[in-house]
Image 1: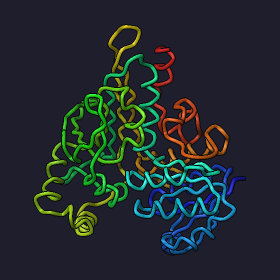
Image 2: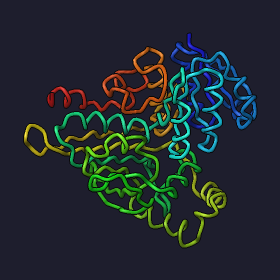
Image 3: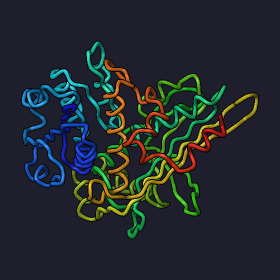
Image 4: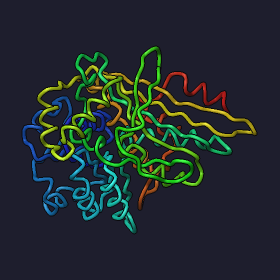
Length: 369
């Protein structure tokens, strides 16, 4: 049984703990600065728990000793501290961060490491990159790769058409930081909340706009091989305009703690959500201009006897699937591992990756091949 440390006992960390402990394959230790958060963990499963200051590198490294892997589910600003502690402890490292700067530090730590460093293992970045890379391999020449992801309330009832479903800090960060894209064959930075587009899926109209961090390493991987590549977050129409007013007109991009307090006091959370994953790739195949699409909707569902939101299920399921593949020796065991290095077929066949498997996708791939 593999010994695993999970750092962070919040919405995602608690779900990761439920999935891993419930599988019977992992001995789980959960670390968090809050004793209250640890006490709220699902009592159906046996966890080793330890309350400690996550931002204390020496204490954290000691707590990670003898662990096969560290699964980082803490806020993005703690990413580099936890990654360094994992390296010091000699453990494999996985995280969920969408923060570009933190991921660059993780990549530097991976250089020459005896253990694997696999950042950005969530939904976006994470699974969205795995799916896009798989589709891209089916083409002789790539033209456009479009990645769209959204975690949305099923029943929006406010002007933002939004409910809090995951980290408020993470939402604000992706709305503020520059975004990577490939435009006319060249890697560029584009502003967040811009290039808003509308599209319809199953009779529902959505908008999608630039947000930071969703592509992971895909831009660097495909630069020079694709004409256009971009990532956009999906929301209901009108959301982007209100957020731009808050961030730009009211200047709250420079007062992020104030914006966080406003959102958390005024916008309720919900477990009744849906995650939409929509990847479209076009290009030349056997002399013809073709397009392939992966699309899926994932809804809230019970995990370990407790209802979990769709964003909890997809994010936790993704990082648990990657951990499983690492544990089974199906991924590199040392150095920096990209999401592009993870085969989609292996991911979807995994017990945790099953959340992402559309009913008709296997049949579609068999027919396409």
